[in-house]
Length: 368
Image (tube, one colour):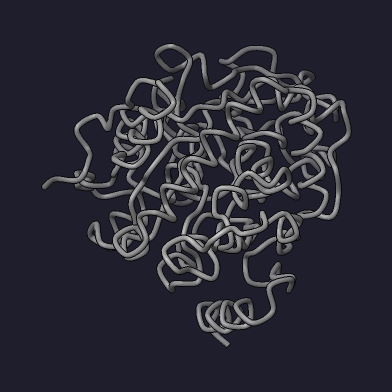
């Protein structure tokens, strides 16, 4: 059975069986719904919707979604409309779920958002908010690599061909003056595309010399004896770059703006609560990770991973535009027209109501 067919059938099953585990088709475990019992008495449905389907990854870089789920922020904002959750393992499967109508709103990295928007010629999604910056590091075996120049000739892992970290690493390699064929990963550095779940084992076995990876994988490698050679945030202005966006189906945005606004309000409220309650928030995120992935993170991994993430409502649009340029230069993407990828109208409405300044779309917003 073709993988795409299997995925579509699985997505149909998911609609009927909300707690089904979907790992075989690119999903992680279906996130448990702790918040159904927390619907306030007398609450009404938003836009007449029975539910809003929210997707995210079981990664620390998706802390807003993890905590918003675990602490009930999304359900509170949606009233009697049920917040349903699905945890994904990879961007392409989340984009396909959005395209198929099996997902309404999702937390996702910049590269899948760019690719999804470009491949659909701007017809399938909008970025409606930011969520996180940072949390990406180059971790190496200190016995083999002691300086940045030592990376040349080594085997370095990235999570997936063309994913956000793969693009960033290829761009960094090019800036060193080294040559690598983006598709094969062969050249002055060997780029090994390795799922984040197996990268620590591969590193432990000695088959990798290092990895350019997001949290918590970076901290897992450090726990295995690796050393942080470079924090990607140091390569960006103000040490900020988008690692997680909030996206929505354009159809859902058009038909149910009140529901989208409610989710955005919940996201902003969640980020505010996390910043005011960092220890409790970290524990809540880890509890949700345990439900979604089957295993909580140990303190020696969670603590440094959590510290390296900066939560932000600002989508940092200028950095997404730069990331698209990096993908083009690497030969992984044809020059995309990203005008219209952002619609920050509802986010800025939420921010204004809280007395916060508006955020900018870097000229890539929707046009009247």
